[in-house]
Image 1 (tube, rainbow, N blue to C red):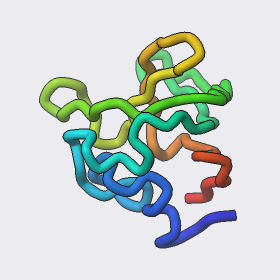
Image 2: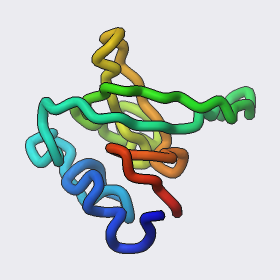
Image 3: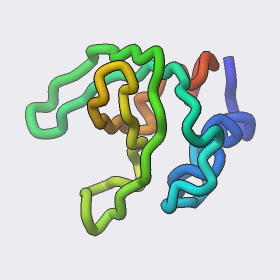
Length: 106
């Protein structure tokens, strides 16, 4: 299990929140730009207050982060592209269960 300060190295340079992120929004400081990675996260719909389904992506890429002005609460989300389907996705950082094969515990 990964806990504490080690978490920020998993996606260093992406986003602005701790512990998963550290402050870049331009995409230039991504941990492995252009390299697909596996990720697992839970889904949550704030409008219907429904969720719990797990999304498992075997090959995802980080994409440029949106600003809070353009997308509400974007500073708490990861913006991804599923390289298998080409679909753009986003997920709440606190619902990430595994990132690049590392189990996340908050």
